[in-house]
Length: 62
Image (cartoon, rainbow, N blue to C red):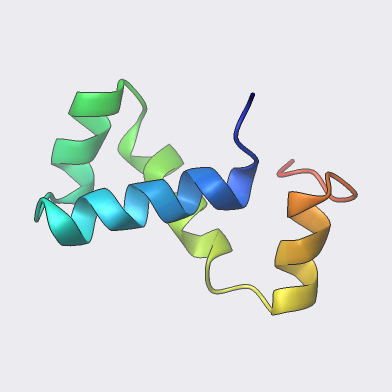
């Protein structure tokens, strides 16, 4: 099953906190640009109703 954008963001945040990685280190480990990591992490700062829309795929990241 594919993770939604919020689940990906939560996973990235956990790795940063638990493994104490920088966004740059995480980007190298997961093969994504640092800006992509940063954009995912920004999703966690959105209001809960917007996050819910992302989770339910009513709103896209684009």
